[in-house]
Image (cartoon, rainbow, N blue to C red; front, top):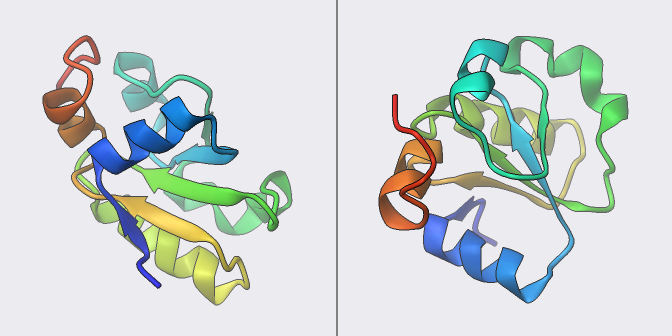
Length: 106
């Protein structure tokens, strides 16, 4: 099973109407600059105490600026027993370049 997803794969899944939780693990100031619609903001540093905010049954797609922090978040969630978690490769920056240029780059 792959624990990553590309921006184009994610776009196709969203367009298809798949039930996904988009988990933004960046800081609030970053979320104010650019965000994916319908995402949940839980900064990486607060993730351990915020697990109850996430549904273990729903697929979670974690993202950050370039994919490093969300990679850490994905690994952490898998260790905590979340079985359906993926990291958005390249983060929101790759999303802006490959999928939606209206999302600001920073």
